[in-house]
Image (cartoon, rainbow, N blue to C red; front, side):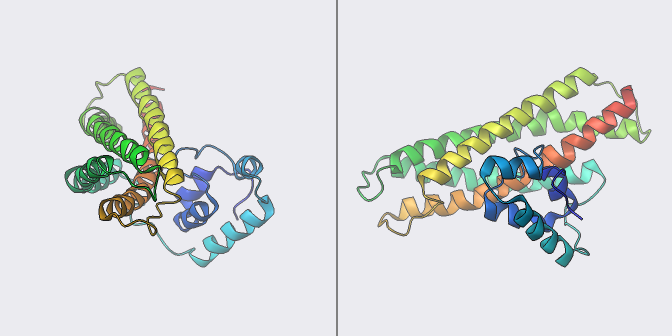
Length: 239
């Protein structure tokens, strides 16, 4: 049974069905996964008892459901992340950047924040692309080497401090991306473009809404699953 002392990230990892509840309540399960249910409810002014009741109801209803990404092998999880990111980098993010440039050249009376949203969207696309590239080229190879050393396939040559510093840096960047998404979500009134006549603005909001959910899930998988296990493995290897 889920209790108030458990962290948001722990609950989301063990019971993926609860992610929908967190999203509905505005609880960030990815960037602030280290917060307990008790602490986050107090911060957001939510009734802890009611939140726990809903979390346990959803968890019980899906007790036999296994998340498609729930694999103990880090290589498999990184492969899943990289495949998903290939689509984001090659298709979704460039599309958002093009739409943002188009919206920036317009003067939308019905959406005074449109130009600001377009600027934030372009910034988000650039930040996410750079972050994904660094993870694929720097961090993931280190984690892969750690796992191979852990199972005895090779000796580890990466330094523990290097891995820990990279994990801390990437976690910090996750927080910055999460803040950008929250600002965009607020400025677009939850990606609502029903009142505009501009197809580019509508398209941008639609793409951003999908990107929001995808990125938050990926950040959750990294912060609360991949990074946590990488630290456990490195601790076992280096003591």
